[in-house]
Length: 334
Length: 289
Image 1 (cartoon, rainbow over the protein chains, first blue to last red):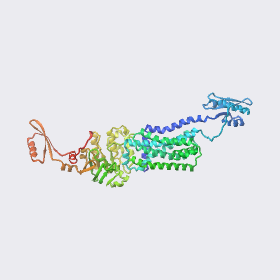
Image 2: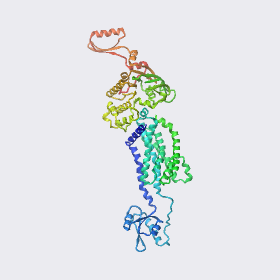
Image 3: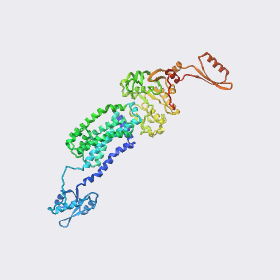
Image 4: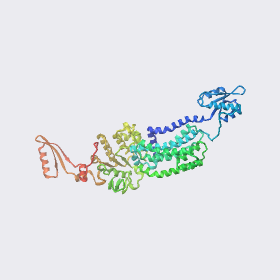
């Protein structure tokens, strides 16, 4: 039994690695994650970044922390080196008895130096009215919004790729009419389906791990990530089966698979942008529940009980879809 | 090995039957050829016998398994060679067979040995997508032997092959027959059916018109004729004379006595002639047949 299941999976893997479209599908999520990672520091620069020497007074550091992120450096030379880095950071060092000197590289974003100047002016004279109304408030962001929502979206979106791989391998079977040969071999139907499905389940998990690691989420619970990814990959896989057994041409099949993109985008973006009172509108979508799970895992707020409940909802919806599609899949496999 | 009664099948589940009331049996070690033109119902019959099509009406047993309750274990006992080659193009010839052998329980053939048998060992490492039609067909044929089948279904096994390779395939079939493999051959190639089969069934418009041995059919439907080529007045002449008709028998005697015979052959009816006589229909061949 296991030998036959693995034979199907390994055949699909071997065939997939010889298919340029599948290779692209395999590496595309990683490229997307790398691109997103490149954008994340820019998003982080929306606050003031100030470097001060370790010898700076506690009061000054505390005051500056009221306006931005403060880094401590060994000495003036270290601050100059740090300021020369490409990110948006200004150095502040002691000058004379009570003066302060501002060190900038000249590549700072417009207004950054002026804002730090104004903050320093206020430090020296609390009565000074700042020319700008600078205020910092904690909205609960512990992460860059791009890193948080972008990663959640990518993990949920990539579950489709597993289904696509299953679909393209089935399209290959249709193309070469090899299903007839499978149907007269001793492999049982369920063994064949499991063998085909394995790649569609494992790939999204590997993708999810890779993307989250690229995005720097080293502390999250990856067992929870695997659990949610497998659950959400099931529905993509069923769609992959439905399309795969009827299409005999890969481009047409991929075009049909795009049908999945709308509910995924609607679910994730709805989950991000809609007010809570509108969320029930998305309860029908398994992708919404997957998004919520992944988001809570990324924020390290996930509780096993809630994850299991979300997964049960995903599996329940998947079961309904499977029930609706079962006969169609069975007919196509013949 | 095969025993079916009243097989009837309609693809649209209506009264347009692809096959109707088909009954026949094949003994262990026998080669049975289902002979008929394209669209006669040969492949439908084979489809039901191999479980690819679900039985609708009638009953039967294949290799000891009831057609109405087929078990996957049946497929450890049968091999199926399809008319249209169907191998994985992205896998090499050897990988195709290595994969397929893993789908069976029990003893299987060595893939490389099978490739040697069908003359594909020199391209065992090449992807099947690069193969010619004939090479793909041979690979499909080789694959059907991988599980050492007791019952072998061959659908047009020599179609599209050049004569040398077709002859090689025929030799393999004969060799398997000698080793006791039961074979169900579906073809519209009467020469192949004549050469390989112990029994033939004529199928036309979904109905099995007749089942018998080729020898019996020739005796029953053929005429005892002699074709003779001889010189007369320095001209080469040809005559076909009956061995039953008294007048023609005397004519043959006269030609023999004249002693100027070039060639002389007894001429039996071909299966095709008998087929036309029985069914009123002609068999259609591909050029490569």
